[in-house]
Each structure stands twice: as structure tokens, then as C-alpha cells.
Image (tube, rainbow, N blue to C red; front, side, top):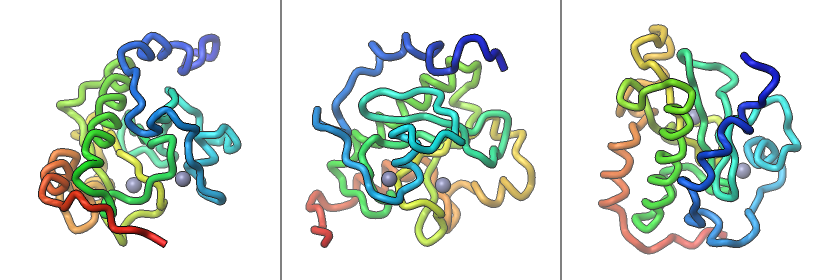
Length: 176
Ligand SMILES: [Zn+2]
Ligand SMILES: [Zn+2]
């Protein structure tokens, strides 16, 4: 890894291509106290090295990589797990994917050779929406293949999730 130029700097030319307000709607990002991913987004947690960040998303390495590249793409806002999303949230997921794909490609990965998706409750450890992008999928160990098994009870691929969202209602269930 080249220590001279940070990952973030090398990714800067993605900014223009990835301009959006789909997550924050131009407002200040909403954080949740005590959330580890929110801490990463604000820079309070420095253990996880951020690869790319803009106003809407943060991309960093999974601390337990399942293959050569294992990116986590999270929204800047504290958004809960994918199961609580509604149809109108679809563009948010599409944006997470778009950014993850761009960052992966910039790092020499190929999205078509990747496993992309979300952990499904109750099998997720962190209550902040995050998209896993694992490349190459063929280099995953047996155990990791189980943990990130496509459309198992605990892991839903990106494509499957979009289709599922399409079938959900548009009404947001009000949370207390
Ligand atoms: Zn959070
Ligand atoms: Zn996960």
C-alpha cells in the first residue's frame, strides 16, 4: 500500500461524477450517538481507514475482509437496516451501489466478479445500513461463502434487495 498518497486523495476525482444529495437532501448528516459507523463517518473512530467520502456516503474496508477487497459503503445519515426501508428509499441504495462500484473499479476491482449485498436481520451486527462489496467473490473462503451466501436467510444480494424494495409499500412506518 502506498503511504504517500492517501486512498482518499486518489479517489477525489470521483467527486464530480458522484455528486448527489440523495441521502442528506442537502442537510447536515444525521448521526446516532454510540453508533460505530457514525463515528467512522465523523472521523471519531480512526481504526477504520476511510477510502472515499463525500457528503452522502463513506466507503471503508471491512475489518474482517472476506476476500482481496471488502468494501463497506454506508450512508452519511444514520439509516437503519435494510429491512426497515421502503420503496422510496430505492435511490439511496442505488447510490450506495454506484459509489461502491466506482470506488472498487478505481481500486482495480470488477463489480461483476463481486458479491454485493446486505445482511438481513437478525443476522447483522451493526444497526447502520451498509452495503458489502466483496471482490473477487471466487476467492472467498468456505466460511465467508456461508456468511455472505447469496439470498440466504441472512444475506440478501443487492439485486434481490432492490426487487424486494420494489414490492414494499411507499408509506414509511413511523418509528418512535
Ligand atoms: Zn450510525
Ligand atoms: Zn453486514
